[in-house]
Image (cartoon, rainbow, N blue to C red; front, side, top):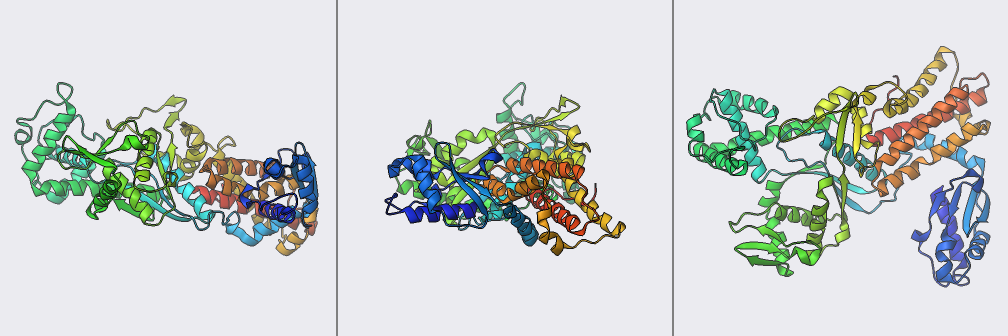
Length: 584
């Protein structure tokens, strides 16, 4: 309906061009919003206020002229000028009947639009280092990114979902040596685990599999490994120790070290892929950093910066003039030893995204990446790309609570709750919806007991129960020897004349707007809030009205409305990645 009212306003403005308006008005200036109070009508437009200054007209007088120029429309009952110059529309009741018919006609497509048509978007999310299982923080990023992708697809964007695998650099060497030490311990060698290694129990499982496959061929004595190494923490420097341990492992294992690295890396990636797939989170592409480097993309990005005068050499290193693009200091891209810093492949990756033809680059990142985003945007500008093409959705942290007590978590020490553990405890549906209940810009307190409860306070249960209640009503038809006639119901919508039924149809009509707004604002939580309100509207109506009455026109009209509720709830839950059960 908003698009139809936008069309009416645009036509009125076209008719006024050349008289009250000297130039055509861009349709993007037209904003149609729902009124906050029903007494003011159904929709309101502020175009007269926006055009008053440029047209030299008083807002109310211009609004009156626009109203007079509006073409007739069968869905509009009345139009009036209100306040400082707002144009308020009141719709005929049958306009909402048309919404119900549209829901039944479009089914699972109801809510979709073409607002993003022609815009190519690459959405990168999760991209956790493959050095351990996904934890609950990654889970929030996964739920948010997957749902945002669903919203973008529903609004017509051409979308690519991508996971960037950080499989090059020091962290994977630490993973390899951590696995090897666990392997040696399983072989019976007595040696301490490095303070800066990955300490979680998961590496014990990887090491056990490595031992099964390679036997003791990778075994070296503790003396061979430890002799001559610097002291580890707390007596020494843990960073120096882990680097020395990696060097010793390379020397002792030779080419086998790379095999341990590859084995450990693939084990972690397999675990991450499986976890995400079981969570209903899928990607169009898993992009390896090593693949990126091998392709020459890093050298291409550096050459682009060089050609634009954005690099210089100092102390044997290659520096990016980041301060010219808003950073607080220049950044090293290539160290004096010839090794890239982590920033160089990241720059190359994002340049490549643009060169692959994507208009918008959306990154879902942890909240601690704020400064890094500005730095990356500056690099894109330096390479001749528009800075606004990069958009970052920064996801705030998650805290788990059990019985009112906060659950302690710390990743490097291995004291963290994995996404898999959380899913096993509360289920995928609760995980997906609870992660999305609050704005991604807000810290999330995840109440484990509430997520598992079967009560109206649990939003997952409350929304799903509304869907299941409709299914229960349909099942009762046969038990009571009653018949559902959809054609009769759609023809009898005028019987839905109670305040609750009128409010229900208005609420159902909001769904496409909510989807479009949630996609544009990158705000999946808005959809969660809408579904809670919609479920509340259904439960209120269900408790007040009898659906399976004897009178066929009224019964079928109410069944049509109930099934419209169910369809919209199902569509919304699908966008969230939450199931829509037929029974609870």
